[in-house]
Length: 592
Image (cartoon, rainbow, N blue to C red; front, side, top):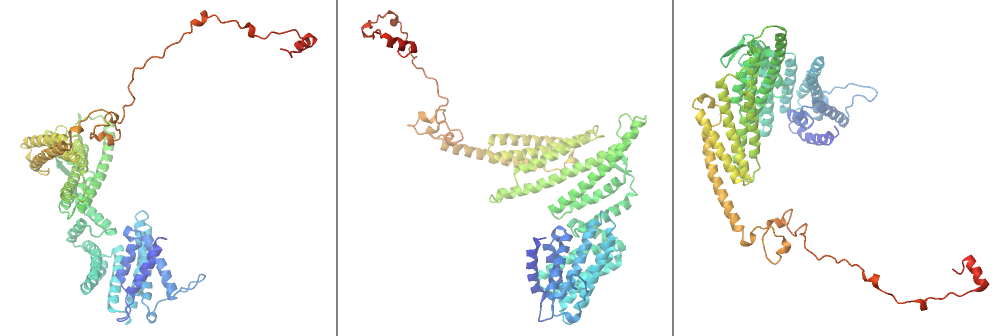
């Protein structure tokens, strides 16, 4: 909240320029003000509580600036803005902020009502309050002091909030009339003003259109469902409307699911008793068609994720039923001789759909990355994907195919197993190709050449097996294109390897012959040795070699035993008698 306050000051100063038009009367850019405020204060991330707090603080500042206080801190005194008070367009902004505050609170309650249904009553009360404030704004704008553009914007804003109230009350006809009125006004305004303002009005029209189609469908227009499905493909009506679209599609499928009793796959008819599985299987063809018609990769990725999420939920529901069936079978004495039950086979079918969807999604992502990789190769300054990214995708595809071959009930289906093995060979070839390209980048020519040969081996094996399974290659990448690309890459690789060898030969001089002689032993001879500037230069031999040295002689003094030394008696001092004094000294030790 504290971080919003510097931005609020900027918005307030900017709005002063949008609010005052002295020549043609008071003016207020209603849609532009609310859109900018919403984007800067929480609605970019769907945080309605933060936006409501901003509206409250904005109202407090406006009342303080205009001197339009509702009593004091001890007592509330209600005041109403009248036509005579319209000397400043900020009075209109005051009413607009009151409506926005009530609307943002209602949207916050709508998010919370998913887990707490009782909050729906409070939601409707706040929406009605917002519509009441917008009606007050429209009535004030009818004054001759307000310009024509502001009057039209106030009418459109009132129609929008009134439509929202009726929409929540499920009064589809009245909601549709209000939304149509709002749409008409904004379309007229878009055609009369600058391109920048027109884009803002058209954006509002695009936001309202899904609501109108939804109301038309609920009134009874069956053609509106096609428009809603198209909007779902293009990502229109995001947020709350997207949830309603998904709920509507699920509701339509639920009605059709009552007529569906079984599904046929791999020559076996399986009864479908789980309602969730019926709904999913009915919508599978529509989902696949939607993915095929997706306008861009982002939309396609979103649809793949939606389909996978639905498939996982359905598999979980069937798994729960399967656990119950296994317990009942254990209690009973019936034994089917190892035959896969219908429910188990349905589980295998749904798992097959999930794994095939994963393969298609990863293949689509790999195709996009391949295009980006080629563009990056043409423009070296651009940083893009690496071959390692594609290797990871093909690893996931091969893992999914390995799971396909182990599905219960299909172990003895030799045609299916051959199809899976053929697909595995195709994707192994592509994975091997991109591993080779990653080796080329680090100039490991021999490894890359061996891998290219393996790619050709896989591709030729696919071509030999594909004669009997031509239908299985429809959805697979073209192997012939891969063979042509590998042949071209082989020639390029051989040329690059020869050039690299020539460059190495030019650099190699007679003095560059490699040996293990340390530097200290050939200081007088110049040699180019790259090891000297590496991490472990060969400067001196370490540890040093052993060298022979003379032994230290041992000395034995044998002559000393045979030497006769001269007498020294004449040099030794003779001790004489000392008398009584000497005796006494001798007793006490003084003479010793």
